[in-house]
Length: 361
Image (cartoon, rainbow, N blue to C red; front, side, top):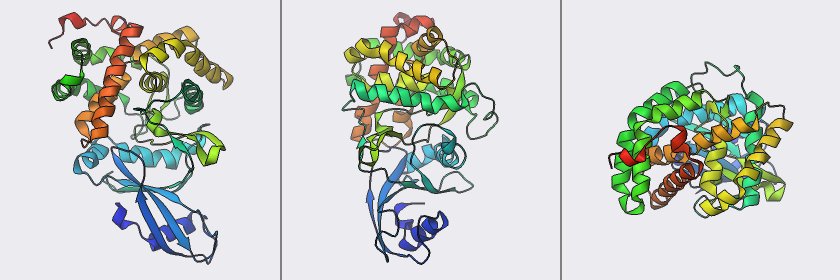
């Protein structure tokens, strides 16, 4: 589904079905405007005009298939669209983190054409990874990450779901493709990359099987998969919701600690991260413990060290798979360079027995 498929009659029927419109209330017109900075799907704010004042939500958000053919192909091949639809249908209400209420979710049999009608949590402050967030906001984000992870920590309930339990096939393909993807990334963005970044990135790309072997040994749960400032809302609903989490296209059954390393490593500049990293990990661990999860802190730190490469993985893959934009270029370079610095600071290369000095750059 695309923006030009959204009509007043269609929205009215879905809101009636979701019990969001009183009987007899109609929508006479809708205003549709783009919203957000998504790379794989397109999002729009819909403002309906009702026959009765106050008859329904003053605005809702529609998320639909990307118009760009490259992003649309990525959304299908990476199962991004079906994962987000199934998340709202099957899992969203089981987590202890705030997400938009879903009024309607559907996807076609080819896992390509989809639509979500979601609660509009405005007014809110959307995070911006390029601008950065505060330490206080990061602290809130890691606490809420624990509320994503706790419900299914170490559980087998979600094993075998074909849209979620995909880590082994997903990781195997990434390990196969990453040397080629990173070679293209390094060629495209060479002027923005230090030689040390290219050397470490090349060594990591050549041995991603070691990375995934370590991830496989970590505790599994629902992992957001793209947990970064752009995908959270701060002070949503005019401040009544401190943080809400959006964009569940990359949800996967995997290690929860990856979300934490991904957010902290991408959201904070390296110096700020170094100063506050351990307190942030303590905050995540404390919240997990309060929610009944048994995860020794020493193990958390060891797992986090390896997971510092995740911004590299997603930044490179996204750059090579989705439509290019100026903001996308800046974002993906930032993700990759910060990830490699993060990995150096934590000696993640040593944990994976990588030798960047012998990488073919």
